[in-house]
Length: 167
Image (cartoon, rainbow, N blue to C red; front, side):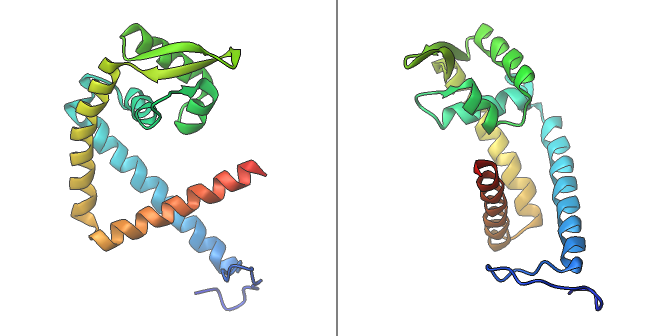
């Protein structure tokens, strides 16, 4: 509910831009941010990360969804790491035989990163355990309908940011 003295503007999509909405938006962001941080700490404490750290798993998982691999630029856009951190992490994964790096056929200045069979095996092993832990923690707090709503809302937020980035 908007503050009594708050001005409102209509948007084409029916959402309000009232000053009260700014408060709610900030409260929602804070709750989302804190929930993600707390859950991340729970997930990081699990012993599954002996085969691959959480950041390494993020890269392996992202590459598992791309059978032909990704350029370093696209991989960087898909994970939550800075470019220098990602480069060092990929170097470590190459050294461990979990990913391979090749020059892009259409542009030898660009590099394509792909999963190796060992990388796929590690991603699946860690992913199964991580998936069970995520399901346990989230299902303990939210119903299936709430999980679907959370999924849909966060996907909408991601699309909105991606669309803004493309402009």
